[in-house]
Length: 278
Image (tube, rainbow, N blue to C red; front, side, top):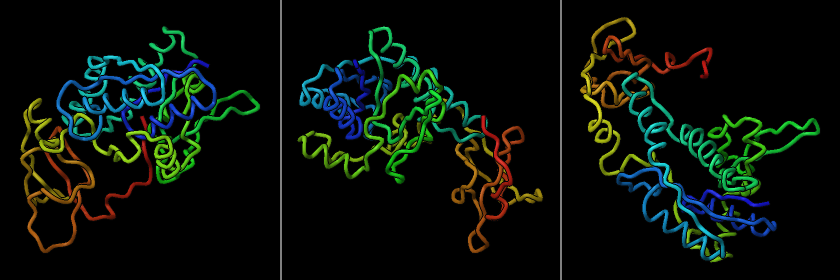
């Protein structure tokens, strides 16, 4: 098969490419240029593109770079900002997977005549006797990433490969060391790629929206404090609420954006009997 491997410049995607080569596939690496701003999070930076390119050279495969920055801004960054305005704490990595890695990238791969795309996600795809493709957890339960690719439909699952899904993280790193790959000891990226560690979420959002002050109240409506930026508050938060010390632990249980209020309560009030998924 002719497989296009999304190479982020990390160890998982590096080993994914190596595994596919060993399996006899015709492999081409690609790095998506998504974020044009600064990045110090170990993801989406110029150095990551360089790491991916150098690993491709080590493996003896071609390496491409696709510029999807406009798509990234439209489908990931802009909704991320709007979610904070709406009082929601988003997961931009899921939207990136949905719209970029398993939409735009797959579309481009098909246009170029590839039979499949592959990534370094710790997840697995199986096909039952009934012909139905199923997404299952990665072998390494501590590194499982099936939840961030949950949205893949049958067409996408049939076109997708997860070459390291059957491996533990330790095995992935051991394989990279054995191959002498430059990414073998590279730390995992754990942050939002377009939010710098130096400026943080406050700086990123503050450059794009105007923060609103909000009252902090108990579930009974009693005033308890205030926050300078309602858009930075998330359910479950404890700190930065302007509360006096010494009392029982209080958590954010609701972000009431229409009324510019942050509702706090005890830990039990965080619990819910149901969950709505959209």
